[in-house]
Image (tube, rainbow, N blue to C red; front, top):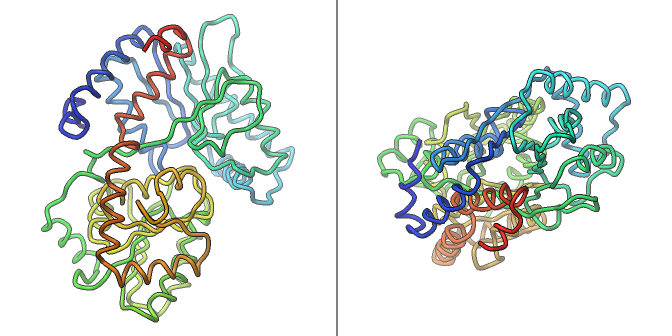
Length: 407
């Protein structure tokens, strides 16, 4: 794990000094993060990096993970899909089971810290344990794209969201009509993590050789969990259209998450769509494959992120940090990271994505300029130090509104 002072060469001493100042004001309060998985997906990745850094700053930060079986996570996956706008039916029995598992977890967890920071829908009903006589503050953090949620599911969850003191969203479009304070905080990447730190060319070459990828030919890559909303089959269609005009290889690489039961099915469908093409490399990466992801992104000529829905899309920020040209869907939090034709390319369809992919493969100087602009944008807006600052201010706002104003 990095030391907080290791970030000084990246962001400057004044940024780190400010974090220590804010953390000193938060220190009397303990902060408990709660989510549904310790491995897989952006939430677990962020907490893995952020909680130790908060502790280094002197904040009593904790992290707990709720327990659930396959039945529970199948229900929460349906909730997840419904919040993204899918036509999903969740029965009364399923809602009752969802609440039952939350209550079982609430009975096991110590929920007495000063700030309870609950991430995403899976543990949302823990708020039932709240005792209004206590001074404990509750915050719900939504990491997913709820631009157009299914009304019935959103209305059910609102019954619990509005019991919190505030709700945090990743992009302005995700805000909802509700009777509590809403806060905008975008996610971030850690520039010093194994996934984002500089790598020697020898390491990049070794990873490519091990995975059977030709380092001498153009490489198009999408790094994502195998999830329908990441549209891996759509990525293959984009590649197939571009391949008719310019030689290239495609890598679809990613893993799964313990709270996502659909991953293996999506993986098999992607393999079927690419059957017979030896230039398509579909790679299931186990947990802890950060160096491999880093190497694949650094070896890429163009990085894609063809999401159908996206809470934020940390893989976009990761690729831009490496100064890679990125073509991504204009959904969720992705447009916060990319200004079209300046720091990347935003698209809306398979045809549009294929068009720009051909252009960037044919025009390497333009692609390079996009990547360099993208790196600067990520440096200024989406590194973990900015994210920690926002969270510290959020924690302070729960108790010390006047202090936050004075800062």
